[in-house]
Image 1 (cartoon, rainbow, N blue to C red):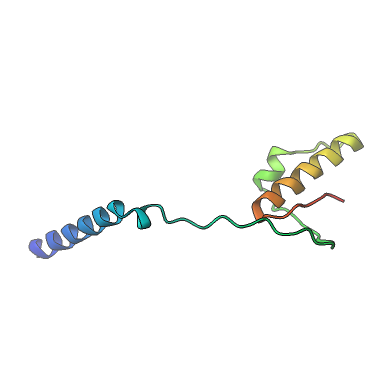
Image 2: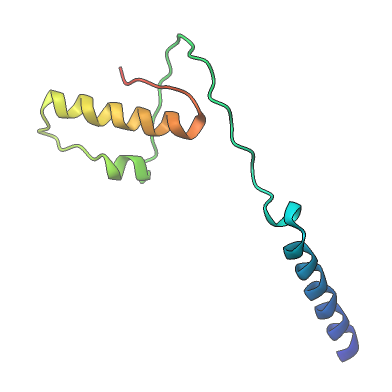
Length: 90
């Protein structure tokens, strides 16, 4: 029983060492998405209540219209950066 556990641990250790020593495996990550061409259209986006984007660009109930437009534009830009599109608030 102990030898089976030891063999399993040794096998995992060897696999981990091989994965770290192979540059192709060690640096494997999602490829960067190319930026997509602009497209005309209308999209309605509702952020989750606890979304980081909402907390970072929070609005008060008495916010001035210019502040609201600025915050909405920043939210659209942040979302667009995540998906590789240029978005505008409207």
